[in-house]
Image (cartoon, rainbow, N blue to C red; front, side):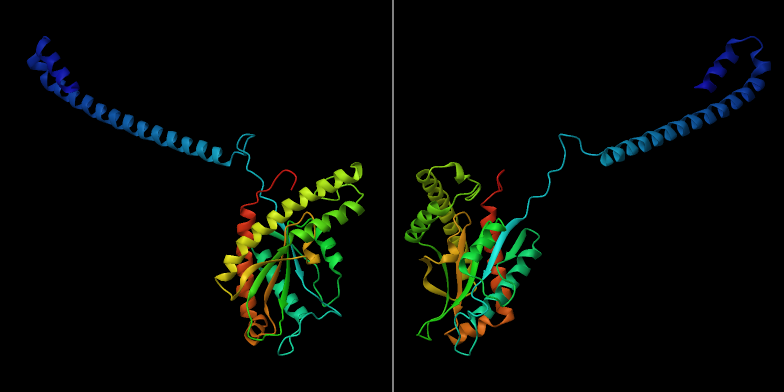
Length: 309
């Protein structure tokens, strides 16, 4: 375009024939200058684009590093749930003695330790053992240990025995209705301190009101115990031999914490040689622990944390 402009001027101006060569040279110089200018403009545009992109990247990086504000503050990790494992018997109380001389107290403690290891490995639970050694602990003390640990789930581990050596299989016990009512009445008669039951201050309540409150709390506890048992039983059935009518009910003293869902797991029969062999096997304890951990996880998935928990 610049070259055409200068040619148009040379035709219209005076002395066009004499000046054509000069004008042509000048046009060439102008053309070169135009090209250089165009290249400079292209370079400047490219540089500006690059600077813009770099600045944009810096802004985005700074935004990524920006500490969260009030609205986008990350939620704190969920509190670990509290599980209490009770190894049955101990010390001067050997429990059942198996067909090959295996002591129930040893089987229960070995299983309790293995289960604790598996639960802790998930990083979801704080685990308390009622005993971690071969020692005698009364049934009432076991319940008290669980309550002082603010347990949210209590599992008592045992191995059964019967006069028929052909009987084998696991079962799960929860507290019977009759035993529950009797315990509620006994608690109402003796409890007289703040936060005695599930955070309820019984010291300010009349005896009849305290009895009603304890009964309500324990009924809810029984419901949660049954919920866990119903989750645990099908998990166990996938991996171990089960008794017929494997969900059973009894007034076991260790199940009588009024505000902690509790189950007693009979892991098998030491009077049966196959069950005894399995219960003394490390591999079987590992499989059984993994099964219990899955059931515990499913249970707590259905029991969300509350403000008071």
